[in-house]
Length: 91
Image (cartoon, rainbow, N blue to C red; front, side):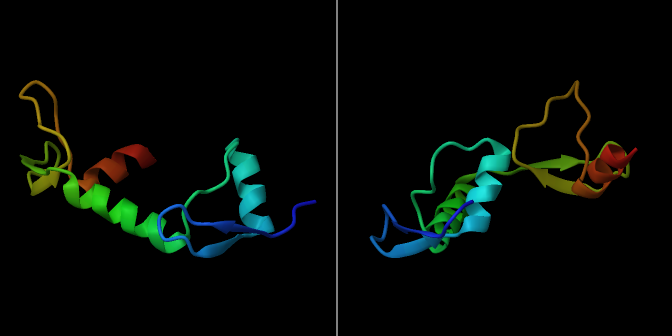
């Protein structure tokens, strides 16, 4: 049904292949637009966003460990470290 497509990255100008498998994945997720960037440029962009994110110190309400979160903790809301948060989501 799907065939590999060659696209041009809007950042670096290099060609990249939008594989049939990737197209199927996009369709399953309901994505309507094709990717505009190659995998390398997408990774660089994602890393830049993460680097720009301001982290805030916090203490986990469950285990008491010190951790960092990408939002400013509020006094009236509990904050959990990534391990405790993951455990809570499993339950």
